[in-house]
Image 1 (cartoon, each protein chain N blue to C red):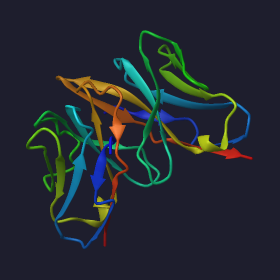
Image 2 (cartoon, chains in turn orange, green):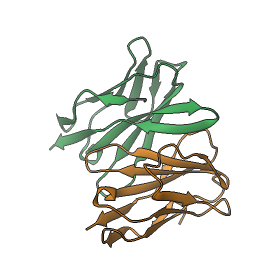
Image 3 (tube, one colour):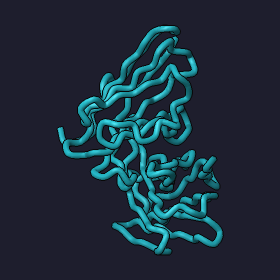
Amino acid sequence: GAGVSQTPSNKVTEKGKYVELRCDPISGHTALYWYRQSLGQGPEFLIYFQGTGAADDSGLPNDRFFAVRPEGSVSTLKIQRTERGDSAVYLCASSFEGTAGELFFGEGSRLTVL
Amino acid sequence: GESVGLHLPTLSVQEGDNSIINCAYSNSASDYFIWYKQESGKGPQFIIDIRSNMDKRQGQRVTVLLNKTVKHLSLQIAATQPGDSAVYFCALRWVMDSSYKLIFGSGTRLLVRP
């Protein structure tokens, strides 16, 4: 499709497990963003890539969270030793330029940590 | 840190009436503001944007007003329809050290009564 694609759409895991969430941005978009959204809250910034490099990872909550974008397209958000507090919807967005103009969001990956 | 707040968490309007959703922000350096609509189970969808050198911008049935003096942003929806029922977020662009990201408010839920 032409939109931002995120997989899996739902992930249930146990506390302490490792999780990977994938984002496939719109073709040609150079900027890619990860946000986290808890129930009843607005999206919270995690990390932003311009091309292959992380231009700003100031929103990652701790060193259990890591994201990569090795070829400047698909990105993977990795969460180690998951905790119940990590449960949220993880949203990915992309934009044509890296100036945070109009962001195109995927439908998110809902993570539940039991 | 930056904060973007909302005056009302839930707004209920009669179908056909006009809706006004308000947003307050604190960062006077922000140069770009966006309204997003989020339906249940979906990612945020761009509605309309406005730059800081403007005080009003109109789209199809929507108008955004920006008052930089009091740091206030509003979204007006004309002739509200059932399909407008969703959560609406204001967001502002935060620029620091060549990093561009959008900071979101906590959202207002719009309920349209038939």
